[in-house]
Amino acid sequence: MKRPWQVNYPESIPFELNIPSCSIYHFLERATQDFPNNLAIIDQGEEVTYTELNRKVDKFAAALHHRGFKKGDRVGVMLFNCKEYIIAYFGILRLGGIVVQLNPMYQQHELTIILRDAEPKWLICEYNQISKLEDIGYSSKLSIITSDINSTEYLSLYDLIEEENSELPVIQINSREDLAALCYTGGTTGIPKGVMSTHFNIVASFFHTCVTDQGVLERSNERYLGVFPMFHGAGMQMLINAIYHAAIYIPIKHFRVEDALHTIRKYRPTYLSIPPSAYIALLNHPNFKDDDLSSLKVCRSGSAPIPLEVQEAFEQKTGIRICEAYGLTESNSVAVRTFMKGNRKLGSVGLPVPNMDLKIVDVETGEEEMPVGESGEILLKSPQNMKGYWKNPEETARTIRDGWLHTGDIGVVDEDGFLYIVGRKKEMIIAGGYNIYPKEIDEVLYAHPAIAEVCVFGIPDVYRGETVRAAVVLKENHTLTEEEIINWCRERLAKYKVPRQVEFREQLPKTTVGKILRRTLLEEYNQQLKKV
Image 1 (cartoon, helix red, strand yellow):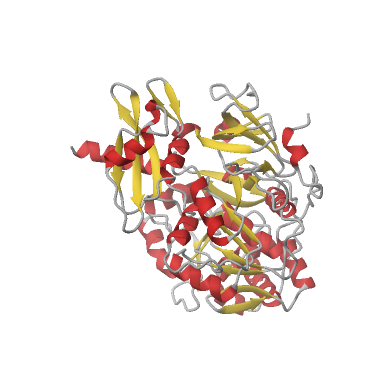
Image 2: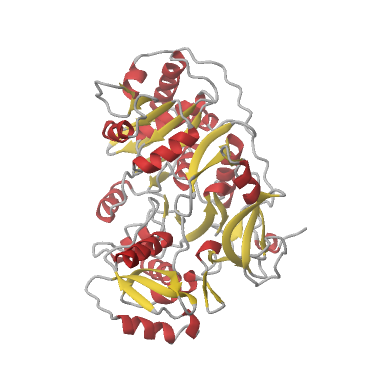
């Protein structure tokens, strides 16, 4: 069945792509063969060529092989963005291993859940993380490798590289079946689940991304600013995209707007993908200049819908078009995006990428396809979708039905096939029998000139079932009262959508990729009630 978005594809972009059946490591080999002396990484001023990177990757893999590493072994990688993460990632994949992506900010409770589930044999981390493992009794259960240059108690990544082992096995990768990564998700909504991604899933995802940038990027002549964490799907896709283009990858360990501006001015990146919160930080920074991002060819937003007011203000200030994207860990990052060429619609996250089918179904059963223009749950079908959840067939069966990935997100597709995100099914507020999607109220509040960040969520209400509460961060040197915010909404929203309560904060809780955590706000609110 022909989908409405296909008529809006630019002529140069096909509806279907042939995805190569190869390992992810292949793209590092190819970049090294084609551009051996080109820079691959600039990490805190240290430069690494493709030849040097490939050598370190192979030496690390050979050292693991020498110690009995087998295809299918799982390795936890718990590092912030750095060159060591890249060496470890490709070294593990070179041996047919599985990377268990761990957030270095996880605390003991979170680590215990994931390590019990994934059961990695090895773990790579900074030395200062080992105390967490000791506290939960895992330091003796894992072969620990530190990313530090000098480590006395444990082997370091650099010790292994310097051993100069050369023997590497011939590994046959079945790209459609062999797992490349386990990335845990769902921690903000329930017990974390390990998303199983094959080599083919991940290769398909970045091929779909690359083709939508067609004609804009030049192989071996690009510079990627790595803001999204590599332990997150969006960050890993950025890295592989950079390696595919034989580009320079510039990892950012922590996004701090002042440091980010300095790095941007020094290295003049051509590819930037950041969350909405980073755009807000840049836009509101007093030292941000209109030409700071003039080197960019691609400027994308992801992890959460960017407020329309923020997008328009940023583009007006810089003259750079922000291309929004939508995806989730289970879809291996981007599933829908604004293409670099062709039409776009402000407020929409764009069109489904090649090989991606999408439909909107009723929220109650997830079976009846909704008419054009009516909201419902977003379903995705694509070769980039995950294989399933690790050791969790029941949750896999609930999430993937007849080949369709049930995202839990609520959206609308218009007559031209453009997707608009309305909200999360689990975040939907039901007040007095009305369905309220927080994102709609977020957009109205972001339009207020004194508001920097906002997050609306539902709280229990004896009479209405739930009622609307807004958490607000004001711009510097601005003031607002609760009454003024409520009146602003009354003028722009149906009465039942207007927040009944407003709380002012200095900052909002966020994930490591800058996504505001609605559920955390609700949990904090409930904790406050218990104390009263």
